[in-house]
Length: 90
Image (cartoon, rainbow, N blue to C red):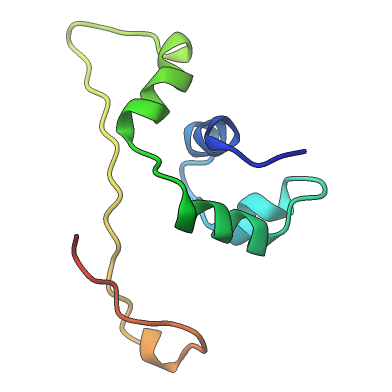
């Protein structure tokens, strides 16, 4: 299986509580954490790509809202975790 934006979009749509690269890799055969990480570093993946993939699965309602939030929260003990680095704003 090749990893691409469609796989990533489907994952984000279906896993609202644990959307880490590690969790995604655990659910895909023959796709490692490193493969996903490399893909996300080199590909430009934006909200329009996500929307193109999932819009057919969304049931709309004039009184409803759909919100995607990519906020990275500061973790109090993050500096004690190996390989953790400070996130920079874009």
